[in-house]
Image 1 (cartoon, rainbow, N blue to C red):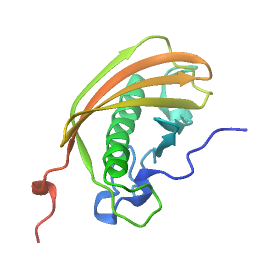
Image 2 (image 1 turned 90 degrees about the horizontal axis):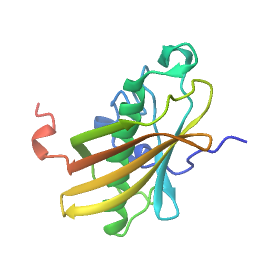
Image 3 (image 1 turned 45 degrees about the horizontal axis):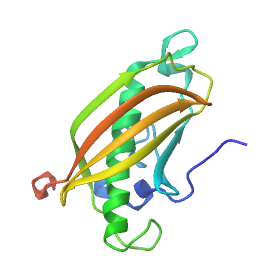
Length: 161
């Protein structure tokens, strides 16, 4: 049986902020990455599609970078939401984050037909800035490692009509 994230932080984002190509639930063409807690770590599970191919049998590196990126910002949102006394599903709108930096190391070719699992470890480095270290696995094989520094989304990102 394939693992899945039951309570994802992305499910709690308001509609105005649910359009991200990687994790936006309202983006019809997007990946719909979903990030939740698994103990003290965060997880995102995703099954690449054939169109995410680099060469036959292997996943395109840009998908892996996007996976780590959205996992990182989602993980930071989970951590700050929990620090504020909330969990996904409790009816409280979570904070939103943007990527301040993204670093990815590709360790092994990532197979195409295997669900991927991102596992995150979170470190608060400032009240408005969090670092998320992520490992990406295909089955039990560590394929990539990444780091996202995520910053609380500035109010200037809000649309003004």
